[in-house]
Length: 206
Image 1 (cartoon, rainbow, N blue to C red):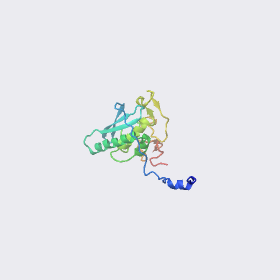
Image 2 (image 1 turned 90 degrees about the vertical axis):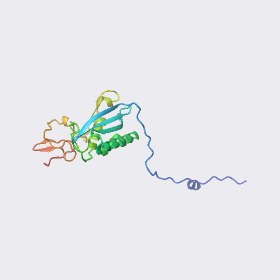
Image 3 (image 1 turned 120 degrees about the vertical axis):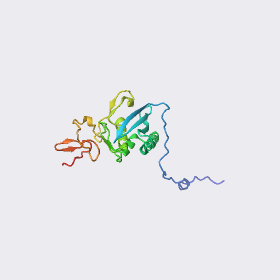
Image 4 (image 1 turned 135 degrees about the horizontal axis):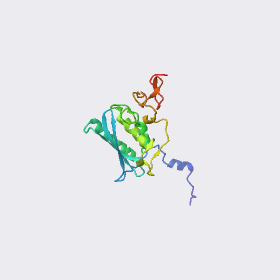
């Protein structure tokens, strides 16, 4: 009888299939919201275009879906906003962080744009800019509403210098102060000129 010989290391290595790099991102599981869930609806107006943003929440208070309904039914922008809300909702339910969406879509510039009537957000470069800065303010920074607090109490997140400074806390009357050409926040008087407390830009003075 022939003696048994163990296969060599080289032969085992040759038999194993070579490892290949993944061709794309891993599959993500969708986490749907419960059939009954809390939600909050926010009215907004940008450059004369009014609408409503409804945010559906997971049991832990985190956003899981959004619905964007423009006041003018049947318009092109209304259809685009409804479809975009579906895309954002599916992204949130597949684990895309709200922070990533806010970073990507805040400060996007296109029409319609204009003043919003919001003391915290001021001038919006677009409807998209307003919506995602509002989501960031309500869920990621600034003062959180009781609805979003797991303990049922209002709380606040530490101030971040990269965020727009609320007009109500700037300590001056807005009056005819211009909007910053870089970030859109209201500027504050600085001698004979204006300076932006959000990004440091000026109205042309050194």
